[in-house]
Structure formats: C-alpha cells, structure tokens
Image (cartoon, rainbow, N blue to C red; front, side, top):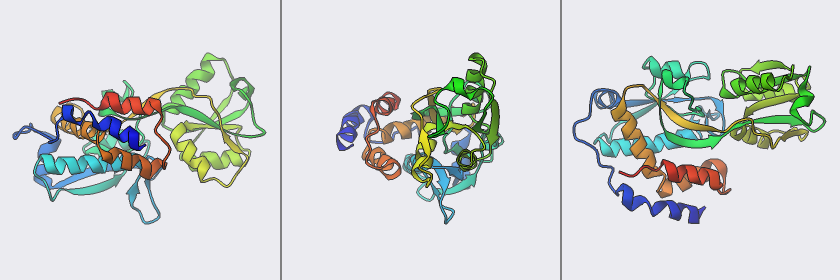
Length: 285
C-alpha cells in the first residue's frame, strides 16, 4: 500500500501542489456554499463500508471519507475555512431526487453511474469500481441455471436489480425475484432459507459477510456486471463539478487516499483494477 501511494504521488507535479481556482466562480453550488456557509452531503445508513451511520449516528465509510476530503479542499480553494458540513440521510429511492430537488449538494454513497441516471444528475470522476455478485448458502444452487423456479433476493432500487432481471431474461431462467429494502434483510432471508441466493454489490456483500455469524453463507466468484461509483451532483453545474473533480484528482495522488483506503478496507492492497482507476481518474491540471 505504501509503494502504491508513492506511485500515485509522482503525478502530483503534473497536477500542481496548489489547488488553483478562478477567483470568480459562476453561479451555482459554489455560490450557495459561500452564501450559506454549509455544504450538505447525502449519506446512507446501511451501505457499509461505503456510506453508513455508526451506533452514534456518525456518518462513516469510504465514500463519506472521500467527500470529507473534498470539502477540505474546497475550504482552501475558495477561502471558506468556516464551511460547515451537514450530513443528510438519503435512501436508495430518494438519493437522486435529493440532488435534483436541491436538498443535498453532493451524494456520498455507493452510487453507480448510468446513462439513465445522468438524465437526472451529474457525476464526478469515478471513485470506485465494483460489480453485482451473489451470496449463497453452502447447500444452495451451484449455477445460475439452478435458480429456475427458485426465489432469488436482491436489494431494491439498485443497478444490481436491473442487471439481475436482464440476465435471468436473457438466459430464460424463470426465477422469482424478491426485493429487499436493505442488505441486512436480504442476508437474513437467505440465512433463514426464504430465498436461494441474494444478489448485491460485491463490496457491500464482502463487508456483510465479514460481520455475519452464519458460516453457511458464501460469496460467489460470479460477477454479473462491472460498475463504477461516483459522487452525484446537480446537472448543469460545471463549476462545482470541476471543483469536485479537481479535489478528487489531487486526493488520488496524495497520502490521503492511502489513509482512506486503509481506514475502510484494512491493509489489503487495492488491486490492479482499482489502482488503474485512480491513476486514470487523477486528471492533470
């Protein structure tokens, strides 16, 4: 991880050591931050390790930490040392409306970028890459085709739900799809033998499995999709989007990224795919 951090920091010279911005920003979110003195971050309650609330109600997670680091960059860039952060709870169903309706300024959760979603909101450069995976019992089905006439669970309102329905239709597998409001509810249903498998975001399922006391649950190697996460923000607000992308680009070549990764994923190296994502997403000035 240390070597990885150094390999990214060699790009710092190309990006510049100072977060340089224009003294006159256009109308939009940046003007709102200057006027109101508060930035509102949309966070989730139950998508650990990306965005969640701990027992004390504190917002935590990998994407939340990235957003907090972005806010620190904005404070310096726009001379807003007293800028306050307000964490606003959003759900899978309300997150994008919260942005388009002006209830939050930046989405800080496991939000997959799709063309359909870009009709409603805009996105930053990518912050993570993952995909749809499957959680199963050791005595459960061994292949997708074994799901015929079985009940399969999935987190509602997610890209995984869309991908799963598409795959089942394409392979002509007549399975009954049952949706759940939370990952915990889906995993519980799987453990109680109410469904045969449970599909969801691989990163979230990995963390869910780590905290589960049910040793009969396993994570499959199958990946139904490859998806990138990004920070959601309002459409047609290019000044704010540029500010967020510039902040992320500098974070990606700093020690901050190494610290954020270790805090949320332990000392496991990020892997070549994620490392390549950071390298490609760190845009030069």
